Length: 58
Image (cartoon, rainbow, N blue to C red; front, side, top):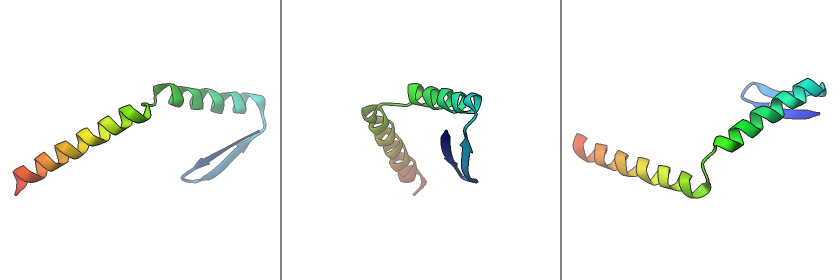
């Protein structure tokens, strides 16, 4: 059985094919996710770009 929380509510499935589909989707997301350090680098970069853009607009 799987339970996936979505913006529209929870989705439950007990069918083997449905469980496998959710497992594959989760594995795909997990394998493409950034590491915590990579995420921090992206966030710092975005903050730096936002500060630069703000400085140019004033």
